[in-house]
Amino acid sequence: MKNIVVLTGAGISAESGINTFRDANGLWEGHDIMEVASPQGWDNDPELVLDFYNKRRRQLHTVAPNKAHFDLAALEQDFNVTVITQNVDDLHERAGSTHVVHLHGELLKVRSQANANEVIDWKNDLNLGDQCKYHSQMRPHIVWFGEDVPMMDTAIAYTEQANILIVVGTSMQVYPAAGLVQYTQPQIPVYFIDPNPAIPPAPNLTILAEKATTGVAKVVEMLRS
Image (cartoon, rainbow, N blue to C red):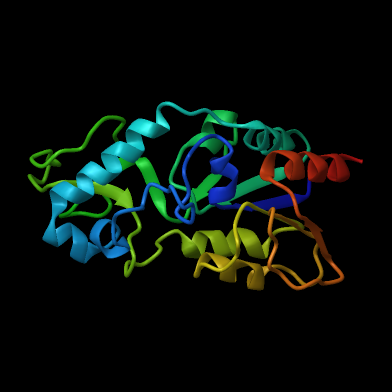
């Protein structure tokens, strides 16, 4: 079977009701990015950071995967599919995708400050005093600004083996994720789905200026035909 790599961003989750960073009414409004998404912010005010992610975690429990998530999961019937997502939610997994690489971490996991490899599932609020087995405070398992992206090498390896690339709901302006397209094999088919695509045309590129739920359905139909 052919290998499909799907790169997803905030746009696919927005249709499930998760506010995006770029929205006027987004979850990040009222907070300087560095206050809630940087090691410095964590050091300065861990209670603020924990409250911010606790609210996001609670919201995640109220939403469900949408048609685009389910359509991508269904592609596994005919292709080897790897989803590389910039999103920290679990909507791809809940829709049935079995191979998901989270570039920016996972909201429903936390990790130890003392040992970054000590990662555990965490579905409820995380509070000051919640410690790991090393007696160290647990923090959100999120890649913050200024931190390395540990799953980047894994994502590159899958992208290099892709026969088809699908990009959904991301502007491709945020690095290092945006740089993944540079690792594809020359001239493989690339499908770009975004309501406001800002990407130059190319012979191997199919642009669908649509939201994720309708654009993914069309790409799936193209691939299966």
